[in-house]
Each structure stands twice: as C-alpha cells, then as structure tokens.
Amino acid sequence: MTLSMYSSLVPPLVSSLGNLRHLLVQAEGHAEAHGYDATVLLDSRLYPDMFPLKRQVQIASDIAKKGVARLAGLEAPVMEDNEATVAELLERIDQTIAYIDGVPLEALDTAEGRTVGVPLPPAFGGGELSFEGWPYLSTFVLPNVYFHVTVAYAILRNNGVPIGKRDFLMGDRTSAS
Image (cartoon, rainbow, N blue to C red; front, side, top):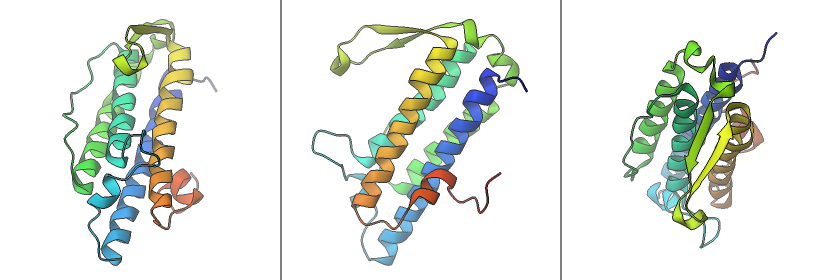
C-alpha cells in the first residue's frame, strides 16, 4: 500500500472534525439537560490567556481547510468567524468537512513536493513559515488541528460535559472502521 498525501491528510482531518462535531452535540445536550444555555460553554476557556471554545473550533476548521487548499494549490473558502451558537459551529464544521472531502484526490498528487507558505499572525512574530508538502502535513496541519480539537475537548470536560476518550477518538461511530 502506498501512503498518499490525500490518504494521510483528508481522512484524518474529516475524522477529527467529525469527532469535534460530536463533542459539540454532546455539550449542547448536556447544557440542555442541566438547564443552561450552551453559549456559556462556547465562551469558556481553559485559562484566561487561551482562546474560548468557539475560537478553538474556528481555528481547527481554518487550519484543516487552509491546509488542504494550500497543498492542493487552491484557495480555501473564507468563513467569517462570527459563529455564536452551537448550531452555527456545527454548520461551520459541516462546511469544512464538505470542502476538504470534495477536494479531488488528484489535486493532492504533487503536493508532497509543493512549497507552502504560511503567514504568521503578529502574536507569533509575523512573517511567514515555509514548508515542503510532507513536513507541512505532518508537522503543521495535523498537529495543529489535533491541538485545537484537544483543547476544545478539555474545555468541555473542565465544564463537566460527560465525554471521554471514546468521544474524542471515535465521535458518534459505534465501532472502529
């Protein structure tokens, strides 16, 4: 079996975003069952200098769609980062999954040798990072998505949402596939 850029990138991203979606659905159900508005969770943070849950979801979405787009030589769809409800974040995740799942396998055929530039925000010193395809996929895109999904999970657990490792790894799938 040959390991392709597509199989190394798209299925893990779709799975992680699907699991993130599942975590948000569980959080909304927990809030409902306990009589509070789920937006309380969306504004929660692990620590004061960290982004809130809704921003963690937005960043995971952005890194996933921009990562696939950059490797495929495409422009990622722009999302406004104005989601204020669980339903809006779920829609964002659905749109992100549809986009990355819709990128043709062939678009990533030559991605391993493609040079990818990633602009850094001012908080990270500005400028731009430069990667070749495989290192971009394995040391930037996937670890970043996993980080933000993990932080989202931790925020929800810290707020008493009854989710566990199975939810994080498998989402709403009932058996490993």
